[in-house]
Image 1 (cartoon, one colour):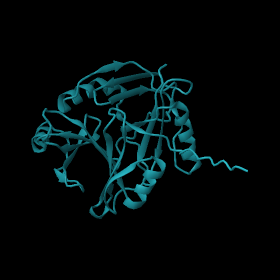
Image 2 (cartoon, one colour):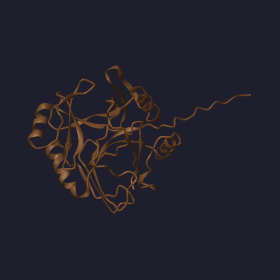
Image 3 (cartoon, rainbow, N blue to C red):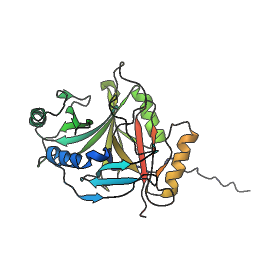
Image 4 (cartoon, rainbow, N blue to C red):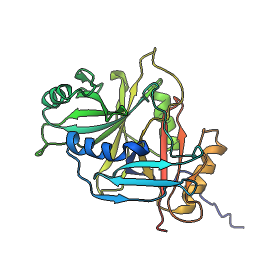
Length: 282
């Protein structure tokens, strides 16, 4: 008698870093475009009057390069994905952008009345500062890179603050499929990575960093949403169900459920929001 062994498929599909969205209030959309063009050197690549969810009354999206979209909706109900908390504590997730001459950029922002932190060393030994973009106070993070040839801000890493680096590392490996690139837990951080949808060779870096003991604990839905992409539609829905079946807190699926773009988010052990999408043309 021959025994046939079957290999159980990995319930976590390949996730690809796919840029991200910045949630902008409807009436501020054009002002936000102007701010990012003026102060970050981004360029308008594409504008769409498009409904990101079948339940919205109206929608706008503007692509500013590097896979970065401004997203605004008008809606009479709270959507499962497209919403953000404002006027509250900032998330422990920092979407970082590389720029050269960090002190000069910091001075320029300060002179123009932009709220900034002091320059500081991250746990990885790099220079950073946080700044709050547009009149809505959307926090982004600048990271020094003097190898850049041009001005402006280029994609960098995503930093995620966690309370237990070792446990968080295991969690992200098990439920997100991240790989450990550099284990520096003794120094308060850990570099992990996912595949990058914009490159066949490079991987997108995510840094887990140790939170201070007094840091806020809980779920935060900020306006900055780095995105990961699942390329097969059924894998997207299966992954959503897998996370729920394993006790991971997830939002409902948003977008266009029958066809087109769909999205959902879930939270790690520390309340950090992670965003997943699949896109099929309408």
